[in-house]
Amino acid sequence: MVGGALRIIMKCIQCDTDNNLKDRTANQGRCKNCDRPFVFDPKAGSRFTDGFFNNALKAISAENTLYFTPKQFFMP
Image (cartoon, rainbow, N blue to C red; front, side, top):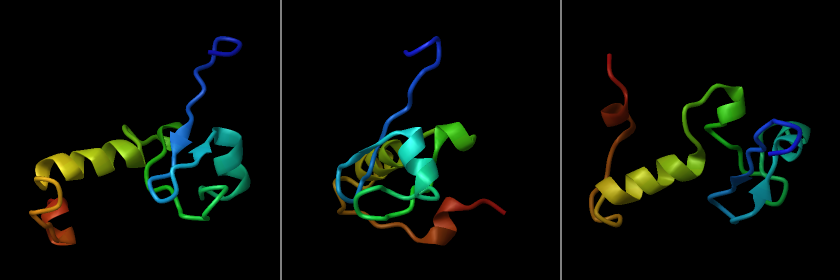
């Protein structure tokens, strides 16, 4: 923590680069290294990060042996 504020550094799931809020803001929500957009950002109101979501998918997909369609992730 710096000055009482928690610094959230997010790791890009594409290139593994650390991106702080200043980096993400300067790059319109994209990775400073590979330009991949971040989908989830706790500073923008998301409850988790891209890395958390990616790890959850890996866990429930049995290490990429099960696959999901976009329709399965959305409830009407």
